[in-house]
Length: 398
Image (cartoon, rainbow, N blue to C red; front, side, top):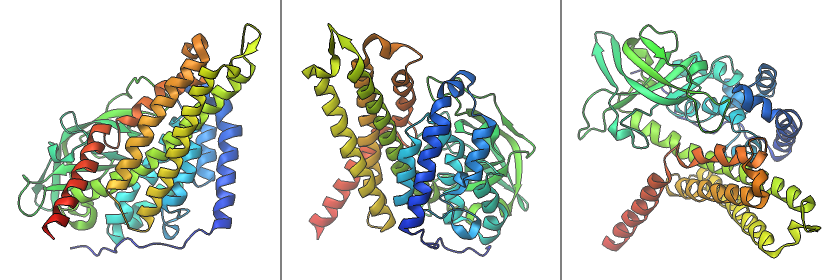
């Protein structure tokens, strides 16, 4: 079996250095990205100069360990940046999100030394875009339903199947691909992860999807037809690593998505406050109306609760106190919360809130997806409820 190093914490980024990183990201988003949101939405594309600026700032590898060329931020620091990313169109974060999150973390946590050396520095620099190829037409939030198959053929594996809604697929250089090597049995679920370069023969990426929102964030179907990869492409050198890798990467990603939701909700509130402060009805600013203030109060309450919950869940992850229930709680609450905040933002804007050129209209559409990916709200409820009941049964048995 290939030599594998366990994931260990790299050098800590201290508070002073992180404050500088945070301030730089905040300034970049507010001064460089926010003014171009309409351009991004209209063209359904992230401008090349913004992409290059993000690369120059190290955003393609901010959560990759420093030994592999990243900034080495932990999840508690990650969520502070994510709340900034959420303040603008979510396509920005999507551009480098898979490198830092669900795809990159599979390699960070489960890759062999050779796999890390081959890919991580390129992922951290943005030279390589990595996609997380898990979701299938018949297997979404629950990887146990996976149908893509990998069959051993001599020293190689041959992969056949289809993936859907794969973020960054049209631009990807590497597909972190989940495939079933055998039916689930007593030894495990039989799911392995394979590193499949985009130029591998038999791999086909469809044109990018037309979506309700998040224009500029490209997703596509990916087809595997007799895709042949060597045994060295098996992440961790172990065919039973896949399911655990998926679950851990998704759980970490849920805290990040929750933070994005908080950032989007804050933007929706800020836009609403600007609107109600200057828009009048009968000569009176509508912000003076008590029912409007009620909406504003509910929005602020949800945002503050969500921010506190995200920070708590991230701290529990970093401290290895809770890496299962807390991420699901944060994602469930915050993604549902941002939907309610976006709805109230449209409401307080009145008719103008329904117009395509209004920021809150875009936010309303963009954030709807947050309740679906990295596990739907329904899946989060099952994880939370099932986990708590399982724990209670264990305690009852003594």
